[in-house]
Amino acid sequence: ENGEKGQYTHKVYHLQSKVPQFIRMIAPKGALEVHEKAWNAYPYCRTILTNTYMKEKFMIKIETWHKPDMGDQENVHGLDKSKWETVDVVNIDIADKSCINAKDYKADEDPAIFKSQKTGRGPLGPDWRKELANNSNCPHMCAYKLVTVEFKWLGLQNRMETLIHKVERRLFTQFHRQLFCWIDKWIDLSLDDIRRMEEETKKQLDEMRKTDEVKGMSADE
Image (tube, rainbow, N blue to C red; front, side, top):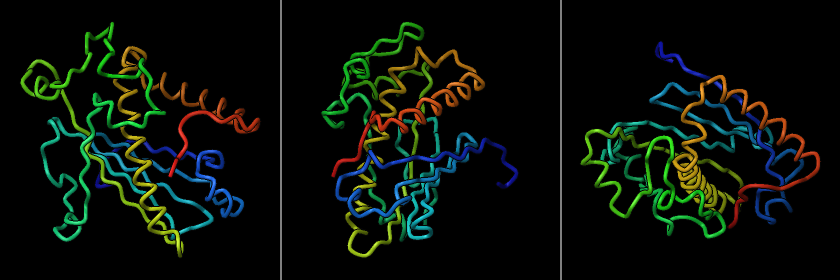
């Protein structure tokens, strides 16, 4: 787009075992399959999730700008004034354990405890952001994510849109905590290494789906 080059991926998520019981009870066959199309043109990324059953009535769009700052910019996505006024700004501190679901907590994925053997980064103390901002020798970046949700289903729209936003925040928090604490596992990987791991993970997930083995996070109300 606009002459920019990047990477495109298309993934399919099977969510039958990941959604609340009330959704499983009413969802028609095939309604819990979500297609994710993602465009990565760092520092800008866009992800769009759709569902073939609901068609234009369901959409989650996640747009991300990565900026070399401490998260102090406003409206980096350039929304018009009326739309910006409807945006709920949520600041995520990956070192703040109180921001995560108790069921998601793992000590080895806690940035307030973790110490990287390869990079020397961590643990993150209560004033880590202030210390980082004052350290000109350490690079830093903020991921500004704009999440747009549409779920047009009579009687469920508000409930589902609220739930989806809640789940996205939970995902972002958990993922970025893991990303920091897994740095020693990925810091030396090439893009080819990552693609190979993605393919291996896909095969493992396909096998789990066949045996109905449930792992990972599920969406709670």
